[in-house]
Image 1 (cartoon, rainbow, N blue to C red):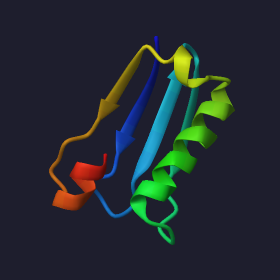
Image 2: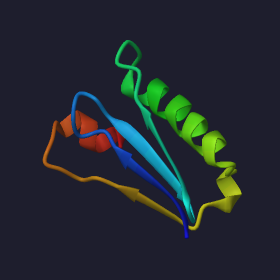
Image 3: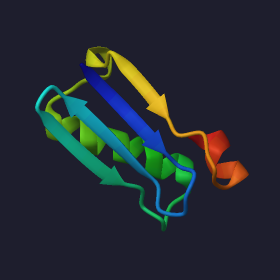
Length: 74
């Protein structure tokens, strides 16, 4: 399975990508807005395991508990 996990519920959000045996985690840049940082973190983690958007078979997002705004962005 090839997938993407997004967690923006906490102050230090992250994305995780997995591609069979390969895994990568990229933390969000807290100096940027969550929305801007999220896109960069996804691109970084996906590049580390050699995935493109079309390769993903599933996407999961953490829904809480956490900040209301963080949950909406994730």
